[in-house]
Length: 415
Image (cartoon, rainbow, N blue to C red; front, side, top):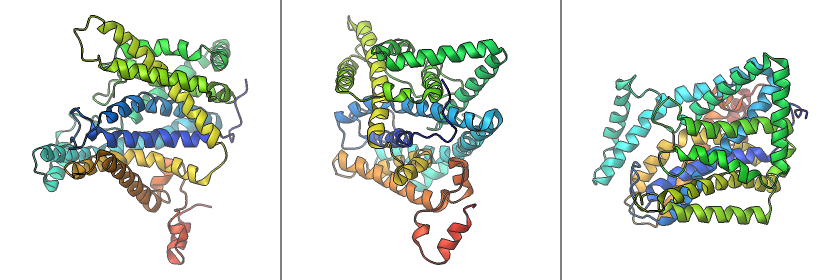
């Protein structure tokens, strides 16, 4: 099977990438509204059990969806520019934001946690929170590059490096490379057309889930040493996306929407919701059985939601759309900077006597809207935008201001 041309593009995958990252913003914005304290920065006075269900479902597939799309676009970039160009682009677009972002965002996040703890005691000192947050940099190298939401960039770097290393090793033996390519393409093609694909793929994922510290996917943000089960699952989705790019037409079969698939997905969601009630019932006589049932249903839910999401966006966003492409470009920046803003807003809203749904909506919209405003004016048309998006692009807002500002904006964009 031939790799698609370098300029070949599936426009709905732009929307999928944006959806996965923006869903992460809403996910984090919801964490202060859980009915039990989960160790988050602050706990709101208005809570709901619905939030726990939302967290369970959204966390089951959003990062897996991201890594699959990342693998797909990574192979596209690799095929377009070759090994050296691809490696350089990963260092620039992932490595630099990861390192610089950590040093900027870590103190801001710590300050949010300090203010959140003070909020639970009824006394918030914003200046003291910021002061303490930046003082934590004095403790380096203890905790270096640990403790932010940027772990996903670290894992993406490590998984990409592992992919390139494996590919380079296999290429040393021409017959092995041809055999490996034929085998992976054949397996991918079979899975795309098999009615048993989700059932079969759920088994190895469930094996990885068994070794998590809780029922579900762990968040590996505590150590630079990769958590092997998490690494294997995210790496598997990345590798699957990498392989799929060589046979992009298989996405139609693999991700097509059907009511049978939707019904099966709803069944697996209902199963994990029901079984999750037994996670802390350690002495229950059927605890192990419930755990096994949960992780297999969780794996099936994960795969179903990943492929159904792609299928739905294929149905409704398959044509070029400037708005979708703009949001897709901005989504990387939005996810990088959102968490401190979310935590600060959660602290500010925590004691207000409003319904959780109103506060969650407000926190999400303010975070996304404010970050978009900064992106359009200060990121998109500057060298930072070039790092994040591959090239500078014109500001939408400045492009609508007549006179000098428009000329300044235009002068930043290379011809």
